[in-house]
Amino acid sequence: MLSLQDNYNQLKSDYESYQKMAEGIIQKQNTKIMELDKKLDMMSLIVEISEYINKYLGSSEIVSMINDIMIGILGVTYSSVYLVQNRKLKLKVSNLKDTSHHYIINDFNEKNSKLAIAVFNDTQNISKDKSIQIHSSIFMPIYLKNTILGAIVVEHNRHNYLTQEHVKLLTALSNHLAICLENNRLYNTIRENSQIDGLTGLYNRSYFFSIMENKFKNSKEEIAIIMIDIDNFKKCNDTFGHQYGDYVLKTISKIIKDNLRKDDIIARYGGEEIIVYMFDMKNIDDIYRRMNYIRKLIEESRISYKSIKSNVTVSMGIGMSKSVDASLEKIIEKADLNLYKAKNLGKNRVIF
Image (spheres, rainbow, N blue to C red):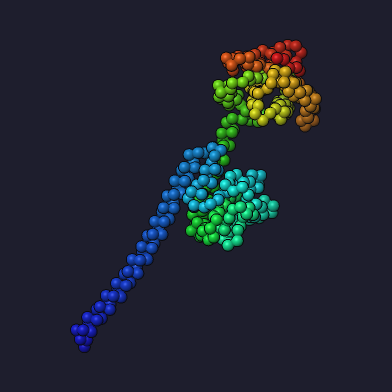
């Protein structure tokens, strides 16, 4: 039979064992709670970032914002964002002057190799630019399902700075960034479609006027409006059919657009009429020479569609502001009147 002392010692030992076990369980639970808190914080952060980026859908600055977010959240020294264009990863933004050490990008572009997450830590400088130091790097591809949209490369000048914890955060972020980038692409596609004439690929009339209102208000220089009309277009449709007529309109639109300056604005005004805005030309003679050159190109271009081959001409009327007080409507009206003069004088000519 156990003595009172033995019973006490047994109870004390059992208590200490249970206490140790309870402390172990509590410690494990606290660790799990801390891990869950970290995950919750990370998810909250990702949701906030996604909401912030989605507010700027359609903005040309969205990629720069993503780059700034990477630097801010991860505390990295350098960040670079690549997006896929024509099946190649193109650098869109970086705070590095030289990204030639991004070998994974080069391999993908040259060999179309499979992209996977990669972590680099090296005591030797990773950068080819010896004026900076890079000793830690993560390459993170951005996938939407199985489609590669882009990649992020984050880098630090301290060895072993970037760890698997950073990889976890970047992996979760990249999934949300993929959705944000795709939403941005779809938004821009819809916006562009609302601005573009479906047949010619030129701006449509309403978008042209929305641009012109802003430009005209802010312009202190003389501007010119050119009205262009395809000669005998109804006869072209009646003789060869509307499919050929559509092809003629597309072809002529392309010739005009390809021979204007980048900042000139061209739109389909209606039917077979095209409107052009030009600025910063020395005088009306310069505008006439440029538009007459385009007219001759069109006249000399034989337009072939299936078995049909034909030459088409255009008439043009130029309207130019004579003072800052001129209204846009008056300039268009003048261009329109000169277009009718060109038609009445025999077509295939430019009148100003």
